[in-house]
Image (cartoon, rainbow, N blue to C red; front, side, top):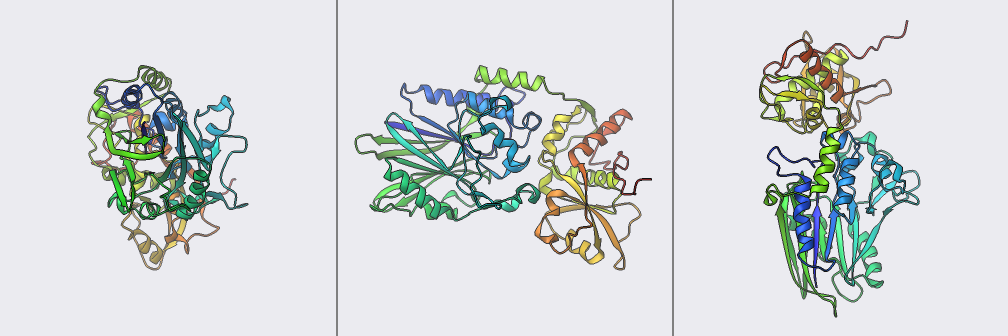
Length: 476
């Protein structure tokens, strides 16, 4: 029998088609439907690696429910947890696996084998829900075990969203234990899903190298397939093993541009893998063909969202960095701080801002998809200079402020950066969480420009139009 394992990683909410009717999740579904229909047997397993929601207006504005509903229609079998599942607080995602259909519900389980609560060292789960360490999927008499882990990505999550949890990154020992038990109980194929990877080659990812060597008590290799994610890499590969089938691995890019396909030819009498193939399927190969049910749902959902026109663009933005000075200036104007600091990664796209075209709220969700707020921190000159020397940051200094070694400064810092280790000796109880969401401030600034009849030209005219939004003065 031929068993097909399909995988999607790092979708980031990109479910809409491009303007030419290609590249959407409905187009991906069309291709997956074709694979399912190639053989009348039930021979397909569809796995989501993680980072499925955060990143687009339609996903963010529905708290990921639009993506969940599409995944249900595509008959996903299982999903793992990525770092961006924490962006809205992990409970936002867990609600879709709690058994309560009133708040939306996934028709597939969520897997977690290594995210623990600090409070009692228990695995993150939903009691009575649909969250497990592993799952076993049966296809035409073949038992397939899937175990899922989050990789070494703790530092990529805003600390305030993950401070109650820790990740056990001793993944190999965990797999050895769980996979051995599964094999002892009749499971034939073991798949390990890890939201983690490396850009230097899938064979070089340290977990994959170690998993390739794992054996059971009988000397048979334990793991057959590894699905990776997080680095947005387009990778297929295998690690040869002495007197055994190679470990097969795949990571399929990001944003719904591709999915992985691993095909195993299995002798069902011995359950041995006789042949195999690993490839990436480019979603553009669907052309304008799409799954009608899914596309209708997406179009209906999108039409129900309020996508207000804020202004008209006066220029085309070709690089994310072109938005940085304007973003920092908005932070300064809204808080009255002396210096504004944010990380390059906080701006996720250009928003497709195009000269002469409308700028809408949905584009701002693509530019700034994270729910980052602004902290105000008092810093000395030396602390400021050390801080802004970090190459991963950008900053702006307010008009009239001169850096002087004898002075201290109020610094507006994006919440994700506020928790970086670099500030461990700077943070104090006097720091202020303004509660101001950066995306909301950016939306408000553009709307003011639009109401004033100004074009939105953040690169050539990065000045902020927004007024002070934070008042630290005591109430009268």
